Image (cartoon, rainbow, N blue to C red; front, side):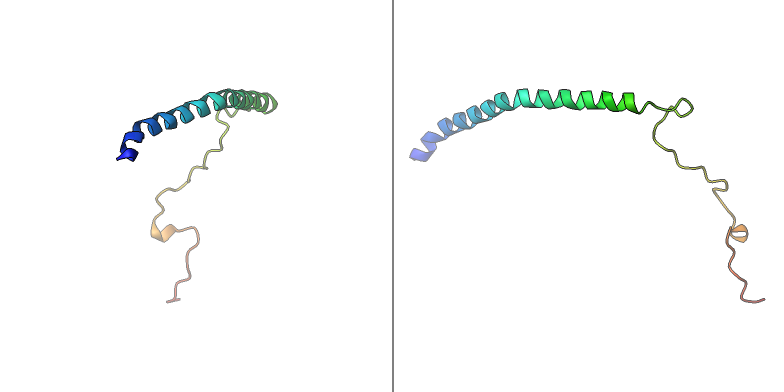
Length: 82
């Protein structure tokens, strides 16, 4: 019975620990966030995108023949009947 009476107090203690941790970690998170922003900007200045390629990620090369017919495959197998 005593444990049930103490549950609200333990819950309050748990919430206090969580809030204290957030207060302690908040400035560290902000500092790290600023570092990441600065590093991102430094990288962008050091590696500007190419003028003729606005999208920095490579795109797959188009397939010149997306639906080849079986008789016109690029590497035909030898005909066993010949």
